[in-house]
Image 1 (tube, rainbow, N blue to C red):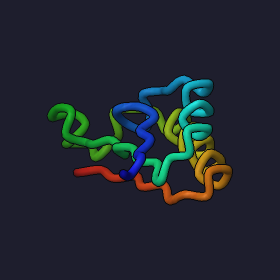
Image 2 (cartoon, helix red, strand yellow):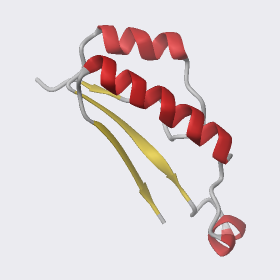
Image 3 (cartoon, rainbow, N blue to C red):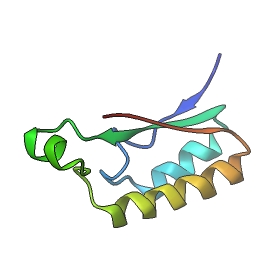
Length: 81
């Protein structure tokens, strides 16, 4: 059995840090999260910008990198354009 921890639906949406800690305590094999997309509508697609703020993405990325290091597992962030 492979245990996959998915903190939320997409990077930048926000996630509960206590829930992330509980997920890490459950000893996942991998942490995975959708990196977001620019296809949330013509404005985002046309300007090539993210739907979520750069600041929230960076903060969540940092938290996930720390969680990944603590757990000693890979972090996979995927996305589409």
